Length: 108
Image (tube, rainbow, N blue to C red; front, side, top):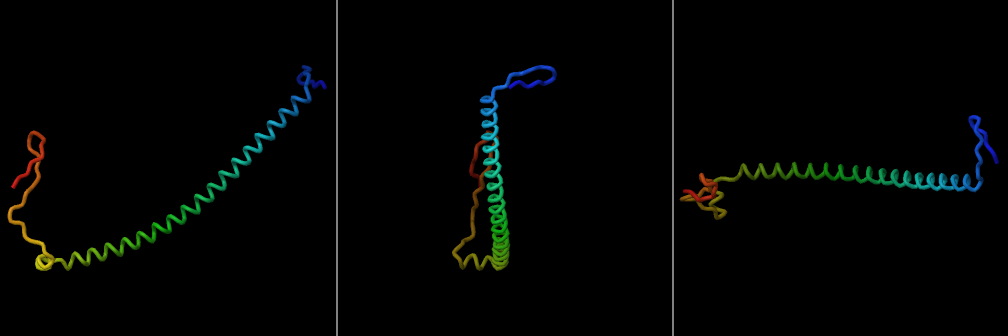
Protein backbone atom coordinates (compact mmCIF):
# COMPACT_ATOMS: atom_id res chain seq x y z
CA UNK A 1 0.00 0.00 0.00
CA UNK A 2 1.32 3.44 -0.87
CA UNK A 3 0.45 6.59 1.04
CA UNK A 4 1.05 10.04 -0.38
CA UNK A 5 1.89 12.71 2.20
CA UNK A 6 3.06 16.19 1.23
CA UNK A 7 3.81 15.10 -2.29
CA UNK A 8 6.03 12.27 -1.08
CA UNK A 9 5.13 8.64 -1.48
CA UNK A 10 5.93 6.25 1.40
CA UNK A 11 5.66 2.49 1.38
CA UNK A 12 3.89 1.19 4.48
CA UNK A 13 4.14 -2.31 5.77
CA UNK A 14 0.96 -3.74 7.32
CA UNK A 15 2.94 -5.94 9.74
CA UNK A 16 4.85 -2.90 11.03
CA UNK A 17 1.61 -0.99 11.52
CA UNK A 18 0.06 -3.90 13.39
CA UNK A 19 3.13 -4.22 15.62
CA UNK A 20 3.07 -0.47 16.29
CA UNK A 21 -0.63 -0.60 17.19
CA UNK A 22 -0.01 -3.60 19.46
CA UNK A 23 2.76 -1.68 21.27
CA UNK A 24 0.44 1.33 21.65
CA UNK A 25 -2.35 -0.86 23.04
CA UNK A 26 0.07 -2.49 25.53
CA UNK A 27 1.40 0.91 26.59
CA UNK A 28 -2.16 2.16 27.08
CA UNK A 29 -2.94 -0.94 29.15
CA UNK A 30 0.12 -0.38 31.35
CA UNK A 31 -0.84 3.28 31.78
CA UNK A 32 -4.42 2.35 32.74
CA UNK A 33 -3.16 -0.22 35.24
CA UNK A 34 -0.75 2.34 36.76
CA UNK A 35 -3.55 4.92 36.92
CA UNK A 36 -5.87 2.48 38.69
CA UNK A 37 -3.15 1.50 41.16
CA UNK A 38 -2.30 5.12 41.94
CA UNK A 39 -5.94 6.13 42.41
CA UNK A 40 -6.56 3.13 44.70
CA UNK A 41 -3.43 3.89 46.72
CA UNK A 42 -4.43 7.54 47.05
CA UNK A 43 -7.89 6.59 48.33
CA UNK A 44 -6.41 4.14 50.84
CA UNK A 45 -3.93 6.76 52.04
CA UNK A 46 -6.72 9.30 52.54
CA UNK A 47 -8.70 6.79 54.61
CA UNK A 48 -5.62 6.12 56.77
CA UNK A 49 -4.96 9.86 57.05
CA UNK A 50 -8.46 10.51 58.37
CA UNK A 51 -8.14 7.62 60.79
CA UNK A 52 -4.79 8.94 62.02
CA UNK A 53 -6.12 12.49 62.48
CA UNK A 54 -9.05 11.24 64.56
CA UNK A 55 -6.66 9.14 66.67
CA UNK A 56 -4.38 12.17 67.12
CA UNK A 57 -7.36 14.27 68.23
CA UNK A 58 -8.38 11.70 70.84
CA UNK A 59 -4.78 11.41 72.09
CA UNK A 60 -4.54 15.20 72.27
CA UNK A 61 -7.68 15.32 74.43
CA UNK A 62 -6.31 12.57 76.67
CA UNK A 63 -3.02 14.46 76.97
CA UNK A 64 -4.92 17.58 78.02
CA UNK A 65 -6.65 15.62 80.78
CA UNK A 66 -3.34 14.19 81.98
CA UNK A 67 -1.73 17.64 81.99
CA UNK A 68 -4.63 19.00 84.06
CA UNK A 69 -4.16 16.16 86.57
CA UNK A 70 -0.41 16.87 86.68
CA UNK A 71 -0.99 20.54 87.41
CA UNK A 72 -3.54 19.65 90.10
CA UNK A 73 -1.06 17.26 91.72
CA UNK A 74 1.67 19.90 91.51
CA UNK A 75 -0.52 22.28 93.49
CA UNK A 76 -0.82 19.77 96.33
CA UNK A 77 2.96 19.15 96.66
CA UNK A 78 4.47 20.80 99.76
CA UNK A 79 7.73 20.37 101.65
CA UNK A 80 5.90 18.45 104.38
CA UNK A 81 4.33 16.13 101.84
CA UNK A 82 7.77 15.56 100.25
CA UNK A 83 9.20 14.61 103.66
CA UNK A 84 6.30 12.18 104.14
CA UNK A 85 7.22 10.58 100.82
CA UNK A 86 10.80 10.04 102.03
CA UNK A 87 12.58 12.93 100.36
CA UNK A 88 15.22 14.78 102.41
CA UNK A 89 16.70 18.26 102.26
CA UNK A 90 20.10 18.58 100.57
CA UNK A 91 22.73 19.95 102.93
CA UNK A 92 25.59 20.50 100.47
CA UNK A 93 24.51 20.41 96.81
CA UNK A 94 26.91 19.68 93.97
CA UNK A 95 26.78 21.54 90.67
CA UNK A 96 28.30 20.65 87.33
CA UNK A 97 30.21 23.47 85.67
CA UNK A 98 32.46 23.91 82.66
CA UNK A 99 35.85 25.40 83.48
CA UNK A 100 38.13 27.34 81.15
CA UNK A 101 39.70 24.19 79.71
CA UNK A 102 36.22 23.02 78.62
CA UNK A 103 36.13 20.16 81.11
CA UNK A 104 33.17 19.20 83.26
CA UNK A 105 33.89 19.49 86.99
CA UNK A 106 31.87 19.17 90.16
CA UNK A 107 31.61 22.30 92.28
CA UNK A 108 30.03 23.03 95.64
